[in-house]
Image 1 (cartoon, rainbow, N blue to C red):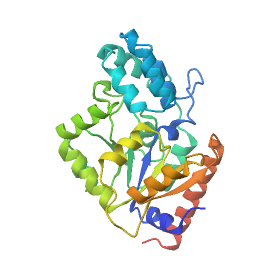
Image 2 (cartoon, rainbow, N blue to C red):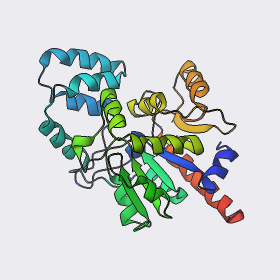
Image 3 (cartoon, helix red, strand yellow):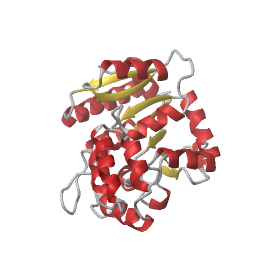
Length: 284
């Protein structure tokens, strides 16, 4: 099921793991037991903070069509920064989420670099408080220590779209992404070089997720190479969309049954075991 080439890349730590919103789907609040919001539910709940009533029906239409970036663009101009900050903290900080099985198995794989477009700090805290204590640095896109971190032996968590630690710098829309990419161009140049020189494994994304759309549309990971990138996605993705993405971005897809998150856990745990076994056989 898992390509041997991917296992080898992970075992040698030449593969960067990208964590999307689905990686946190199995988390549960220690306070109320609730789960983190999906992208659609996140935007629907955020919609209630809009001040422009006339735009709400248009936002609903975009969300229904999974045009999440367009919906976010309209909403963001109609929500005050203070309301947005309060919303982010209430949804991602106050619940005090436990790590998911995906987080645990990814840590077991122990990649050198994790990149996440998630705003939550669930994986960050798990790495710092668990087995990886003192072994991980976290760098947000607006911080300047990424190159120094990458040259060190410590593991790296890169927050490509911001973090709950500073909601004012969270990237939610396409225009915000381009603005921050211009403002912090050195950070994104380093990301570009990482994407061109490493294999990527996307976990917790579907091809309709706005996060992966921004990454695939605006970062060049399509340079000719015999080594593909990989994405774990639900099997209900339309074949034409998969074919287009595969051709444009040199991505191979590993699929699971939609909604079967237990299957995702099992698959990633199996991948972790295969990677550890490969490292034992070839410790160098």
